[in-house]
Length: 429
Ligand code: CMC
Image (cartoon, rainbow, N blue to C red; front, side, top):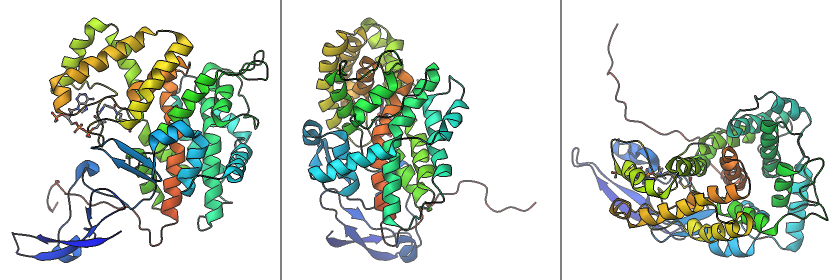
């Protein structure tokens, strides 16, 4: 990280001070304003963190203008083509891709940590059958802090690593258990002989009379490949809302399972991970191609809160590289699994219409990853209310990597933003 300086002058007081200009390996330079208050008696105001770097991180790099996404330096398209999700998870957590022996050990360990404590079954049973699975995920993952608190020494890197592995291993098991609970089916235990994605599909769909996967009835490799790809694309995305939530909660030294539960809560919102579910609801609401102009006009109307779900991104202003990769898979999966779904034709027509519309072109609103992910999940028979849960499984790899990075940072401080107070000034009773 090279350093230059920048001078800030307050014309109202004439005060002037120099601040370091920090430069990462690549990317936009950042003014270090941490001494701004001390030197100038000022704070900065940046709602939504549009121009503010909240931390230093070596995990993921995004260039929004050029549609670049790198995990630990590797382009997302290369990882998507050549790696499994667990290889990517290892990379995110450890900084380098594993060799064969390291990867085998990592996957073995994931298998070892996958089982849930049996007491958790009664915890899950306490939820009403129609509870939203994201609500269950927040509660169940948070409850892991009750199961694994006393044996966790946060100052011990090995204890932290084991906590991270536990979360990565248990997340698909918890997710599938939420789904099985909602349909009243018995839970399916994880199997050590299956890959991460196969295991999840097996736990979701296996029946006592008909195993989803066994040696005679092997899962469709296109479905597993699609799931693996979606998990890689959703694995990390630098300082997004849920990861920032995990980091902020972690900065207090809170229990990691509670911090990840906070991240799950943040991911649930329709402006973030809830968008894939919202895209499907929106397509169902639009219904037919001839109604697209009506909905496009609603999205453009400033007085109408309706937004085209799956369009736009805070960081990507030209295209979302994840959307480019997933668009092709979307076609492959639909062709292979379910033939031609009218909803997909509607999605493509909507995409085409919006991409030509002046409003969307001018505001640089392009389809994001979640415009396509929901359609693929639907083709894989994943229930719509589980879509954001799927995102949760994948993003856990990113959250735990950021948690590990933050916890290992020397001199790490509690996150504590400032505000502009707009209430009443001091007054007496
Ligand atoms: N439909 C219609 N208008 C939009 C949309 C949209 N989807 N997105 C942004 N705009 C308009 C917005 O009204 C604003 O207009 P104006 O300049 O007239 O005020 C302008 O574009 C800029 O929007 P913004 O809200 O200031 O942008 P933001 O960076 O704060 O929000 C966003 C980004 C993703 C929350 C937003 O584009 C959105 O709500 N999109 C739909 C939800 C969605 O698909 N979210 C998934 C994001 S990808 C998954 C993830 O990484 O979490």
